[in-house]
Length: 136
Image 1 (cartoon, rainbow, N blue to C red):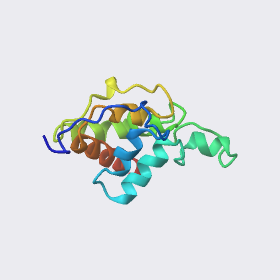
Image 2 (image 1 turned 90 degrees about the vertical axis):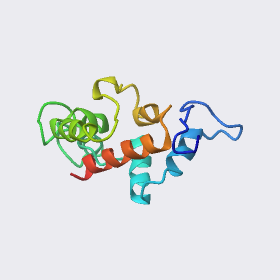
Image 3 (image 1 turned 180 degrees about the vertical axis):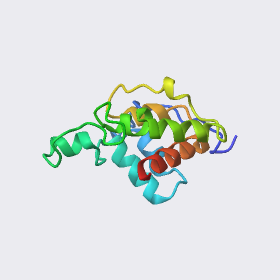
Image 4 (image 1 turned 120 degrees about the horizontal axis):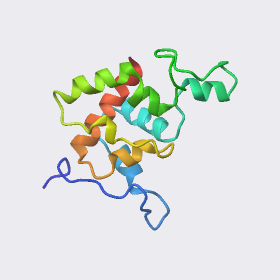
């Protein structure tokens, strides 16, 4: 089994030096560097979502400007907003992707939990899709 087929396990396990192995898997992903930087910002809750802008007094509301239904945190912008779900479902017809209903918004690091147990190819596809949703 090569690295692209080997699942990564351990989003919460720490190496002896205190680093989580998932960060290494994220930065070692063969996606373009801008996608890896996006994923790092996503996992660090540093994307310019309306919720984060509102917290910094850059916007007066945290409601999603696209759908106007929910507060726009990273999970909403990438997994719940109608535009995001439409693109996700379209790409799921081509790539084997997790069902959106199985993705849990448990913490700000939901992306790390989503990537656990995925092969390098699966992680790359997920990150590429999330990056594309964000840029659209």
